Length: 307
Ligand code: GLN
Image 1 (cartoon, rainbow, N blue to C red):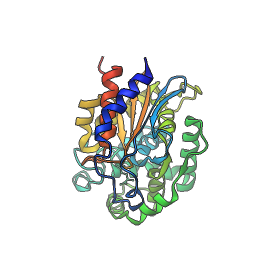
Image 2: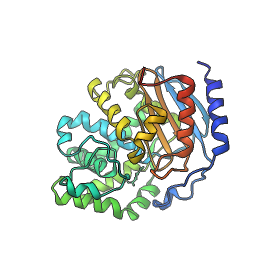
Image 3: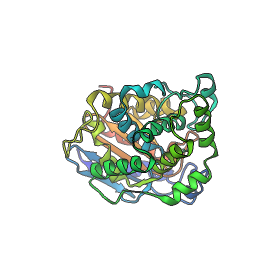
Image 4: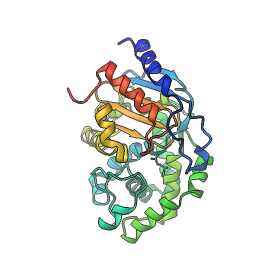
């Protein structure tokens, strides 16, 4: 494939829409980000990356981290996880509480906030909040082959200070005994992993194992079983964009996960992993320009799970 041509076409498709969408401001530390930023990286099986725009500028990965915590939990905790979190699309916003009462504190899936808090809680049970974050960072650094990956403490604090909704979700689940640890311990870990700062190049590289049956094709390290890998991709496909998941799958047709920092991570099984970043969001919290870029990308490459 002529990557220079493909990515130049992506850039020209998004150019008229640059800056569209609304930057997330409910986390004050994210509100000041320049909405005109745009970067994209495509990681290939040999670990090489094809990049455009601001692909080397770090951003807050936010909910994209939920894919990595889910991967860790399926490896460390196994299928017991599914007793405390479902795997159905929610059809509701990422921070919705409404379904939890009807379903006894069991969140619909691990990619909405409530579900990700449960996943984090399982990991905190194993090693505590600090070591859990250390282990996650170690994995991401190893996968991205880059020790520069860090938790942004300013974003962590900002999210914690503005974290009433996530606290409400967590205490509500705790009232149904669906959290094992003190709520503040679990939330500290949750806010920290959402505040991890990565750039598109690192993110696409770190997710390659999801495109290659659970094994990082560069180091040969098995990160999750091939069955778990298929399942993670299935959950991303059906639930990765909250109440925008159907539309995203219709338009892009690949498993993906959005974050309110404006990043989207997409997995093209057998081909590679793609990360795109542009901070303006649609109503559901998915990057507007990032989605346009991915639409152009899949149209040109034909990368799809539907062949
Ligand atoms: N950290 C954010 C929150 O808990 C994640 C939301 C998102 O990226 N969709 O609200």
